Image (cartoon, rainbow, N blue to C red; front, side, top):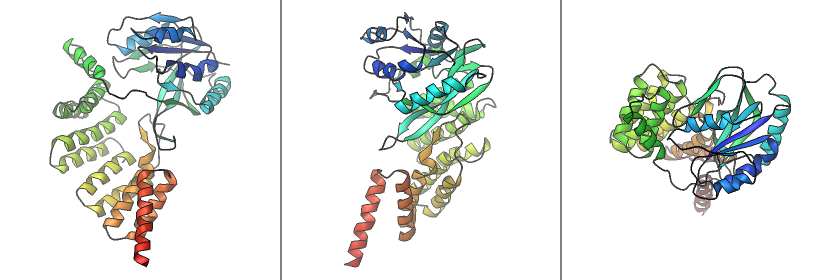
Length: 363
């Protein structure tokens, strides 16, 4: 059986740290906690679970802190979690089974990361992350923000087990944006990955004009991961929708994604949404139907919106067909949306609407 060191970096996480550690303490062989300057009870909580609690002076560099935490690991594999991550009971059991059988020849273990959920707690947004690395192979965390592990060796995808993100934060800070700005001020160039995430941070903080510049430059560069390119097209479209009156610019940004790969359901839904805003319902139907037909590929490493493959196109097709005067088709699409998310407020509203309209018609 493989041995695993859980390595975490934390700061002021007293609200969630115990929840995280309780969910995984029996599934790992060692816990390493690196504190980057907590002023609350975080370190005291960590000490209940391990005697390996270290201080690391924060230098606006997540990769540096991650590398320090991994350097204190003593097992075969190092695994990372954030304090607001958890293992569900089901995933912890699956993790233990895989730990016992599937990692003998792995150097990097990829695990699904569930980050958004529907009304019943079912994951609707996820992606694979490098979750564990064998410490005997060369590796390094890279990136001051949105850090990632750069590691050579055999990569294995852990099927049937996921980490669940349960954030307790209610506001989005400007920390990441400030780190990128500091990096630029210090003359350290941004990697293609950094440029993508910097552009996204600018969008999050409503600096739309600057975000358009950064993302456009990222897309013009021949370098850069294809999944980031496609996501950048979507964010660029959002920026244009917020800052310009011409929807053609937003559509053009989404269409640019087709230069990098085959159409993605997420992009097709975004195009459909724009066409709905333009009241071009017939054209919107085409793109939503295309989204429904596309297979879901969760092994490419990109973000996967499960809703974009089922619920979202169905609920939007309901509206489009109704606007086009095809009530029967509209009801059918709403029923299909309900098979994906039966507790959705939009589905239930439409269901009641059609039922009420039917009663009125009979009267």
